[in-house]
Image (cartoon, rainbow, N blue to C red; front, side):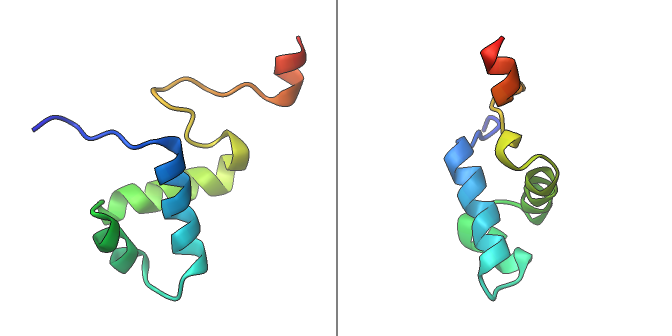
Length: 69
């Protein structure tokens, strides 16, 4: 079986669930069928980059300032 890929929406929803529900990260990861490590890494990325997190296939999103150029 190949490596699974997740949409930006799935990643963002998973992180938001883990931040807002009264469940442990482990429980949410199991409910979503992803690993605990995957979810904790996504949470860290989300907290550091917020709207620029999860760019997709390694391509960084442009900031609003960069889009103007």
